[in-house]
Image (cartoon, rainbow, N blue to C red; front, top):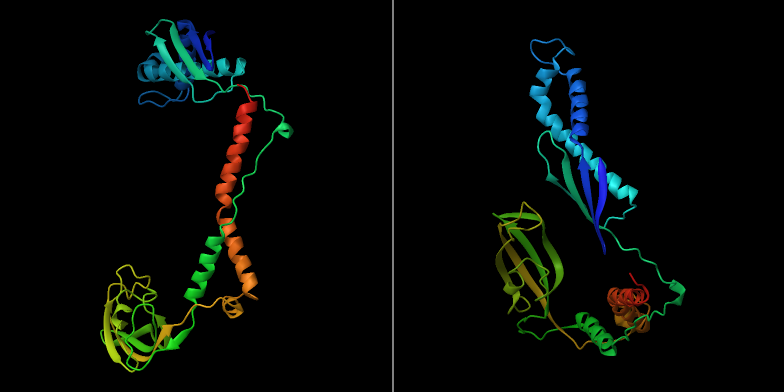
Length: 300
């Protein structure tokens, strides 16, 4: 077996591999001899099958396996003896071979460049920052206040609209039978919040305190409770009160309602949340700054 470097250009390497026909034949004969000691064939005792019979049956297969093994060995030797650090899987192709003749093949590969890292302590990295937008803080605080606005009892005869809160008793049934989790008393429901199955809240738009009505709505086909999914439900509803939202108020009472000590700690939590939202983007920018510095300092 002879291995010759035929191309050394940039990151590309090519090797010419030559294998003598006599070496191939010797390996094939050795393999067939080994097979003859183990193979079982009708009419012959184990280990007594003539080599000519084994060769007729297994000769081509054995030759293919031998050639592949020898090529793999040659490729490994070329890579290891030249201390190549491969960038990808090399390609190995037979260029010349006929039965009984020498074999020639070509090994192509690309290597990784040798990179000398710069002195890290000499790098000057700019850490990006992003000032918090005060408008975003204000908008978030106002949204929290609006979502938690106090409600006021509506005047007699007032008809509920989207955004209003209705206080209701309700009981749902399917095929005349109540179902588990389908009833509640003094339940406060904001119309338009989409906290009930589709269609239920729409059926309450326009109701007044004291109204009693029936709302027919089907459960969604993909509803999480499989025994209710896709079934038509009938809700008997008693409207006990209609409440309208008052003006949003930013005060300590709002903060306490949301689980904070006072308005100042609530605002601090909002600032922290808005700041953390930008952390992934800032980290990516920092990473780019580091890689840009490395690119400028490293030469390969």
